[in-house]
Length: 285
Length: 285
Image 1: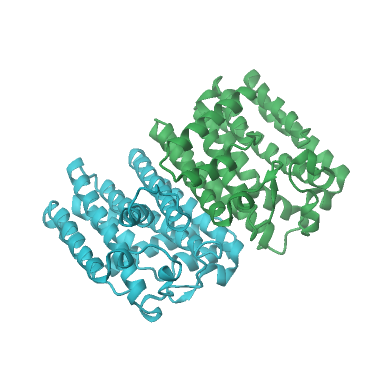
Image 2: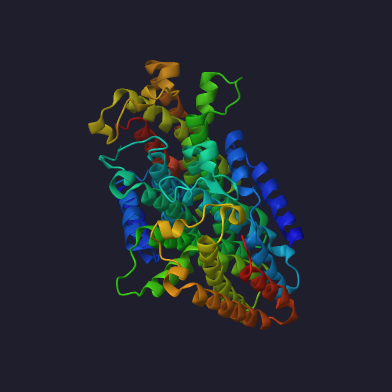
C-alpha cells in the first residue's frame, strides 16, 4: 500500500509542478492535494488493474486523476457556502489557510487538471477517451449526490433508506466506482472482469459511506482529523440514523462479504482487492 | 451568425437535458448556460473550422464544450468571494438567483460536462483527445489569469503593460485561443493553417479584452447588462488605465488588422473570420 501511495504522490507532485501555474495557486493545490490523504481511490484503481492483468502500475495516471477530482470536491465541499468546515485531515481547510477565492480557483484547477493528466499520460487514445468519459460521468454523479444531500430534490415517494442509497451511490459511490473501473480499463479488462470489478466497487462504495457515517457518529476529532457529529447536527440523513448502529454495522459486514465475493471471481489476483475491502470495513479514520 | 448560435444552443440544451442531473441543478445550469450569451467562442470555433475545411458544422460540439467552460467561469467569477457581481447579461447572477452553494456546484458540473460532451460527441478518438488536451490546458490558463488579475503573483520585474498582457493572455485569451484552435482541429487543419488560426486567435483574444476594458470604462449598465466602472473601482489594471483611451482604441485597430492579416492566409474561406474580428472590434455590449 505505501508503495502505491508513494508512486501516486510522486506522479501528482511531478504533474502539478510541470504546469505553468502561478506560484500561490500551485501552493494551494499542493496543500490540498498532497496533504496526506489516504489515497484510497488510487489504491482501488491500482488493485483493480492488478486484479485483471496482474500489474497495478499501469493505473497510476488514472488513479492520480481520480484523486485530483476527489481533492477538488473536498476543497469545494468545505467552503463556507457549502459544509463550512474548518478542519480536514487535522489541518485548516484550504479556504481557512489561503482564502475563499483561492479555494474556489484551486478546486476548479484540480478538476481541469484531472482531465489534462489523463490525456497527457495515456498514450492509447481509445483508452484515454474511455477514462475521460468514466471520470466526467462520475464527477457529474458526485455533484448530483452533493445536491441531493444538501439541497434535496429527490422524489418524495422514496423512503429514507432509498434516499440515502440514492445520495451516496452518487456522492461517494460514483467516484469509487470510477476509480475501480478506470483501473480495470487500464488493465484491458474484458466484460466479465469489468462486471466483477463494478460489483466490487458498488459494494465497497456503499460500505465506505456507512463506515464514514459510523465514524462521524462514534469517532472523535483526534481519530478522524475532522469535526465529527456534524451530520446529525445538520439534520442530514445517515445510515446509523435510519438503520440504527447495530444494523449499520451488519450492513457493513454484508457489503464486505459481497465485495469479497465479487473479487473472488477474478481469481487469485483479486485477493488484494478483497483484503482492501476488509481493511476499509474496519478503518478507524 | 444566428444559425450558428441556434445550432450551439440546441446542442447544449439537448446535452445537459440528457444527463441524469437533479432537477434544480439542471435548472441552475440551464439558467447560466442558456441565458442569451453572445456565443462568441462557439462562433469562433465554427468560423475557424470553416476557414480550414469549408464547413463549420463539424465544430459544434467543440464550440459547445468551450461555451460550457466559459459559462462555468462566469458563474464562479461572479461569486461573493470572487468579483461579487449581482448582474450578468441584465439578469441576477446565478448565486443571487439560486444561492451560493448551487452556483458553486453548477459551475463545477459545467466544467466536468464540457469534457464529457467532447468524448460523447467526437467519434475520432485522436481528435477527442486533442480537444480535451487543448480545453483542459486553456482552462488552467484561464484560472491562472484570474489568479494573476485578482491575487497578484506576477514577477515584480514586469511593467504594468507586461502585467496586463500576461493577465489577459491567460484570463480571456486562453479560452478564445482554444475555441479557434479546437475549431481548426475539427476541420483537420494542417500545421500552417493551425499557425494562421492561432495567430488570428491571439490577436482577437487580446483585442476582445481591450474592447471589454473600454466598455467597462465608457459603457453603461443598459448597454452591457452588467455593472460598469467596476475595474477602476477595484483598482485593477486596465488597458485604458495604462495606455489611455486613445492609444487603447488604436491598439484595438492594430490588433484587428493583425487578425485580418492572419485570416487572409487561409484564403477566401478565411473571410468570415476576418469579418468576425471587425465585428468584435466594434461591439457595444
